[in-house]
Length: 109
Image (tube, rainbow, N blue to C red):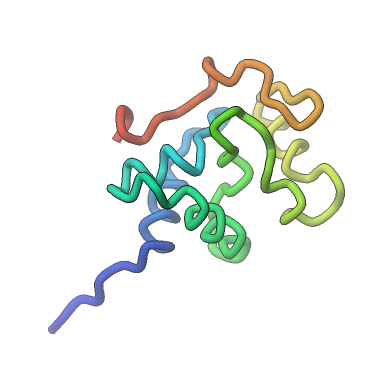
């Protein structure tokens, strides 16, 4: 019996599902952890396609802590609302305590 190799997107989803409540990571940090450091944009594409896969895509932001993926969420401020409901402070689409809440899969996994 052969097992099917996981796709890059599936690997991204596995990492994203491990981001703790109230923490965030970046597209680039996930890409680097998966050994594809130049594939941050592909991680973004994966997050955009993750909405029916029980993946906390709202916890993935850009390297500066900006909610660059927010337009892929329903409603006007859903990404921000989800983060704020977990205690993450967001002002003008920017995570305020980014260094404190940043979760680096290369160090944590």
